[in-house]
Image (cartoon, rainbow, N blue to C red; front, side):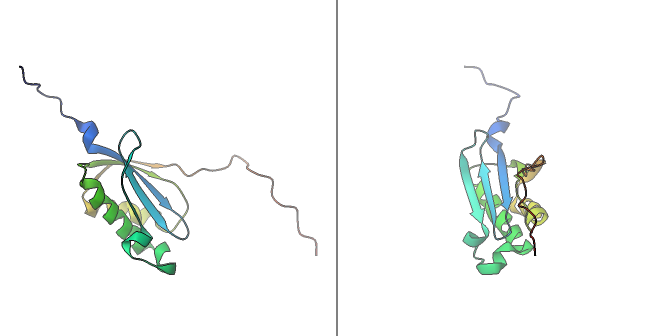
Length: 125
């Protein structure tokens, strides 16, 4: 049998992390390239309760916890997709680096309406 040289399996080391910062919570999910969930974390599962879940510090702690959990299956490089409007948008990105992951790409996939629904009629007083 011949040995295979040169090609390493970087697909196994690469994962996609979805960060969903909502006004009340921050949820972080790490998946493999096929979309199967391998690790997740939220501000409530880290230990924050009530209004402290929506803070920047809670989002950073959530991202660190999710990064540590994503390293267990063997992930090293991460593509980040952020979806939502919340306080923890930027601080959750800062939390992935101390957790041990290397960020390769950052995408904002927040849905924006292209004129959206019709607004309610004006209030008459």
